[in-house]
Length: 94
Image (tube, rainbow, N blue to C red; front, side, top):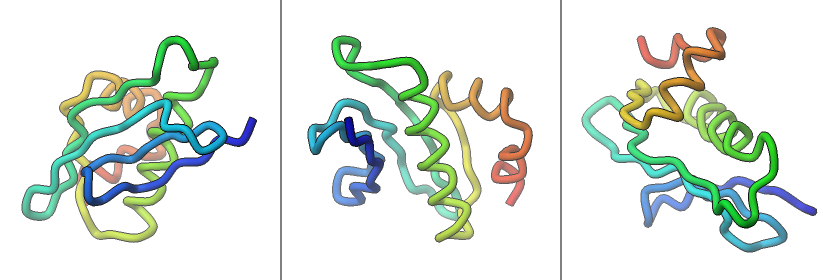
């Protein structure tokens, strides 16, 4: 099983791909100086433990490494993930 995450900017989402098939998404909106994560889901029939976390972590790593955007989490999963990973909370204060 090959898992990858890619930023599909034309669809305003990070996509989790398993062997090339989109099985999860983290949708976002760009607003001024922020990227707002609004919805995250992984196909329940194809998910395995940790896939949503891998999707969110990779998306946040990409934001941190390639932009100066502040992260806003309106998505409950992303908000909870940030609470559980204090090393990423500085992204919310950029």
